[in-house]
Length: 78
Image (cartoon, rainbow, N blue to C red; front, side, top):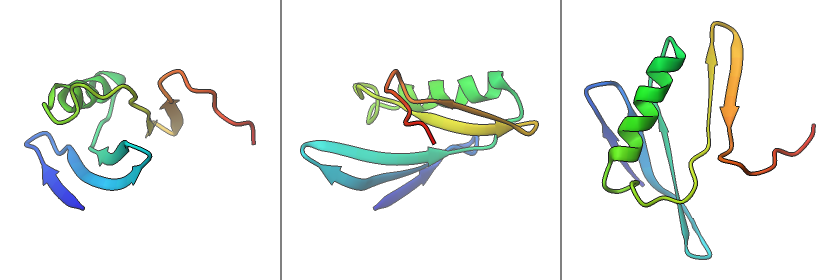
């Protein structure tokens, strides 16, 4: 596992899991608005390491509201 941080506070933990040719990383950073979330996601997607990724899922809590996007995959019912 490797870790990197940017000036915006985005932290990336790379090479967390490798499974059947897929590689998984975890990242996170501080955001107080949807615009800041979008900026962090844009920064991550602009990173050469993740630019060709075919799937990005994310979650966050803003003002007590849970937000998430699983990049089109179905989310199991709980």
